[in-house]
Image (cartoon, rainbow, N blue to C red):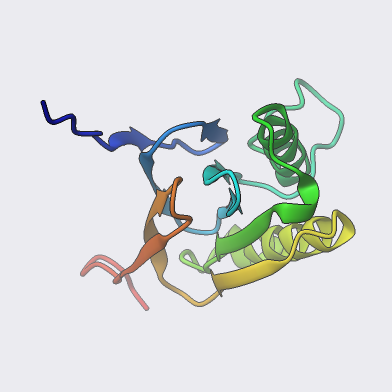
Length: 162
């Protein structure tokens, strides 16, 4: 009798995170947002977040749409799943300047990127791979068991003026 293990697919929306035991292909689409993928190579467990802004200002609920909340919650979930912080590896993606409007003036993309780097460094989690900045959005697929990430740049559309 042959058994097959199916890889489950999951789409990660902005302002959310995902971490579970098992083999998942988690996809998301990033513009100025940033995704941090955490992976434990010993337990072969992975997790990913997708945050929109860098810092929660204390108003409303502290949701994972804010980077400082999303990264903290992702690390906590990975530890709950049995991972040790000392074995976690990070891959970071996104932070593109896809709109030449308020995003550029407010430096949302650059602040999102800086926050990921700063928090991971503070937590002593090494960033082993990244694809950050630029002007193109990205489509990601993160394979939680292997830690592999496929990244495809999203080219500008014919409606863009730049």
